[in-house]
Image (cartoon, rainbow, N blue to C red; front, side, top):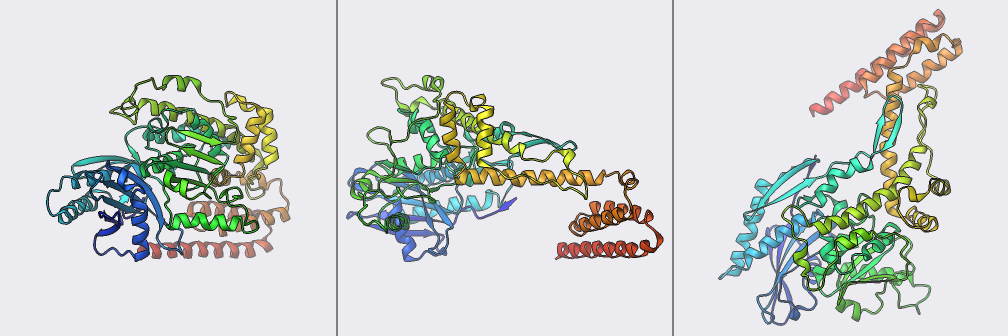
Length: 566
């Protein structure tokens, strides 16, 4: 259960006839923003080509709360103008949470209500925002329980949201320590939420509720090459004519390799003279400090920091040094510029089903009352299954690192998880054949992709999560074996010295598990059985040790009780 504050504040920015931005309102008024933060919000919220914008612009950007902290605030913006010649207005919802669909929907409702204000705009917009914040405060849960769905009201509408459970990666037989991958089952419920209209709340799923078909309708095959780039840990620059275009695509790509977490720095939209933009400039300068003549490439030397960045066409044309090895141009039509060869087999059956015919209106093709759209679901199905199948050889190899049940002996041989060896995995991959899980593609192609993946933050995150859950399983299995230990049968085959050694090992186990009363009580019984088997001269010394450990357990329980009462 996680307790948190939904929204930090809402800002209202006005653009005057000279296209100068002014942060007009901050609601609530008590929320403090310094001048630098206000400047950052204004610069990122307004489209660069205001004169050419008269429709509603809905986009997202991030900025750091302060320069010393990497903690980012998520900003959801709605900018509109009544006519091309009139000043514009932007509402910016600022939060610490990456719930894209939910907050974009909320700020959209706010701006829709504000457009109807006839007189006293400032008072009208203040009333609308305060009404929204009051509904959030009174009716949205303070504690968000995992695995639970909610209906959250605001301005006469309801948003359905789901807080995802931590998936269980493996099914296992505790007694025999038989572990099998549980990929499909562990993510199936969450995946169904993603392709429905129920917004998913979670940082790792930011942008999962965006429609991939509407964004890539004319070149959906590019998504398979983008998947290959992301799984290989590459950086991608997104160039488009509007803030909504670039930020939506950047966020949509962040969920493209689900159920893997994309451990890449995502900047949905950057503009010159902001912290995000300066980050790139600084990194560019550092990367090229030894060769100042090289001013045409920002990302050539990136080895540790990887990006997905959205910029507008105007910035791309004026800031000539911003050039990535992989660029996704959205206008006049979607085109991925890269020298990387496509090594992943494209699902031609899916492309055939979602093909756009001449004259079709893309925004009407994928409408569905129950989901984000059937075409979007087909694309996400294909990419989800591709990632799931890509992980299967890794899951099978990882299970081979787990010790056998017969090799775990209570008090004598604890379970040890073997380390992941890259070359050993590649040999395992080539023996088992990738084609067993992945349809199409050559062995050499898959080997190259896997080798790149093994050096990405996404792999590190996957590996650490598997180690964490497997160690937990091993501890449970070891506990199960200890609690079902046939000590009387073992003692018959031990001499006096071995019995004393076993006593010491059990004693050590108790001292490291004082909080587990049931476990400790069983182990104390084992100690008492061993003492009876020892000569009288030794029994007195070992009985003192038993009494001392009982006293330690009582003190530990008393301390725990006192902490709970406090």
